[in-house]
Length: 201
Image 1 (cartoon, rainbow, N blue to C red):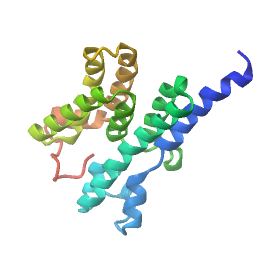
Image 2: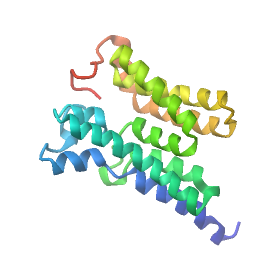
Image 3: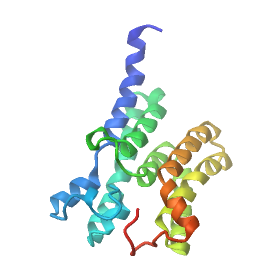
Image 4: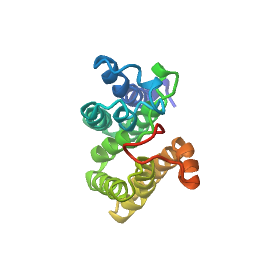
């Protein structure tokens, strides 16, 4: 392959990574004078841990912005270079979970994955959100809701006829599960805190 042919896919992947690695949770809590989010609760940079600062508005804004960055990255690439949109999607989720600015210690990908899915195929994105909300409402375990939604994402894509996205979503689901491995251990041992209590994320 000619070197110049490698640049568009690499740029699409890098663009997604840089977009995904914007740590909104850290930036918002610092700007609001709530301290360094990485030293609070679980140290995670996502909305669940922001909620542990007592700032519900900041937590909601973090959730929205983490989702929007995922959607924005995919939509921009779809407009500029649609054939590379899946690479941007991968880069965005990986960037959120492993941001270079935070020594590769980022979030767990749940909100950013939602944004990516909404931009790639909104029906499967809505299915993801529905599963997340239902499991969270019933169990009040944020981790369980995120894991379940992510693992069922490829099933939703297949049921909706988007078999081209099934393998990608499966990879995302396994990555989200991996990032929640400590939560899974606590869920199995009965020590995982519910939303609004405890310090784990």
